Image (tube, rainbow, N blue to C red; front, side, top):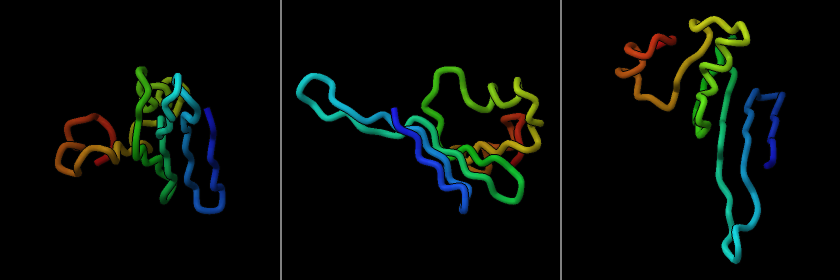
Length: 81
């Protein structure tokens, strides 16, 4: 696992990097941005769902945007559109 934090531009990623046997294994598990005080979840490859975890930690749903859904679908998620 590898983390990438760009605190000046508020971009945050969790990546898997390594080898699986003789094959290179690399990819994004999680990508979050903070824009205008909202958490934009650009990619969520976790089983639990990072949005659910953030809510459990006290982040209001109105501060979370599921950016990996197209804007029309977001209105049905219970999070910000």
